[in-house]
Length: 409
Image 1: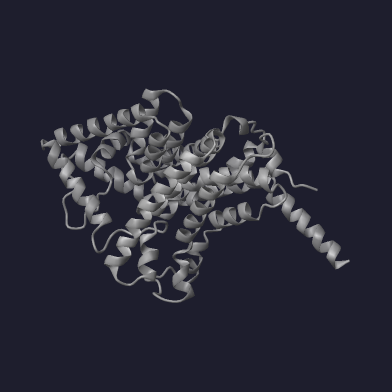
Image 2: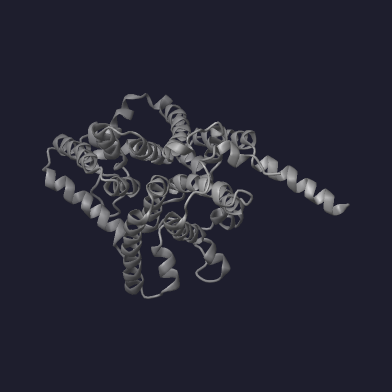
């Protein structure tokens, strides 16, 4: 009797968790929470900071880069491209960017589906997928802090979907306002042979940097040099900038000598790049269109600084896993469910929040390992997708995401 009741509860829970309506509702609530928090006084810090840099450059004619702490870390052309935000009155800027970010989040979810192979795009289950993405903790945080990650991610995904050379190149150029994200899409374009688009992508960066230098009456080389100092300070300085996704802090946690740890990290970055290239050559055309972008995104996440809101780069990997799971193991969704749980609940941040948001993590023990869970997740996904992409051969015709969502009796 109890066993039957348990199976009944499990069946109801499974149907709820695979329901398009459930995820859409949860995603809407998550997005609303992000907007409400972002509109509070003192929130949308990143929007305020970046527009402040733009104002220093455009309105005040002051170079925002010099300083001992190198607080300005967006490239010069990013400030030029984002400076139109200064046209908006301060009273409506946060509200405008919150609404724009919601639209960008929906567009990102939709483009993630369109980037999959054409045979997988009979998407009568699209509401489920959009809801799954909108429910992610990284989406809410991006809305809370007024980040530009969603803008960059949408431009990158649009560059994957759009086929025109000029349009794709311009979109790739816009993604480079956050180079740590744009690198994933540039690598994808190079491996796909879209060299012309990559060359065109350099134009927005070049023109923007020229405009930046001209406004300050400085030389172009001087503008490039000062940003190069920022990059070196953040990537190779002893107190390099640490996020929650790149591998170097995990390697330093395991290996004490910093020089050895950094050398191992560089070797892993190079080796994983070679693995992406090898996998790209060995994939079938169908697998390449499904797995190449997830792999370049994962490679970028492992290689350089990424905060938690950059987890939106995992969206192509999630779509690819759904497709593979539906074809290879249609009755088992444990892997997909575990990934979705981690991205919705924010496993990495739970101890930090429950412990009163301490500024210093413990250096040893299980609690110390918690700060590296997201890094381990990225590595596991990378290894899994490299393996699957080279070995998997679809046994059936492509299914719709509705078929993925409906539980099997």
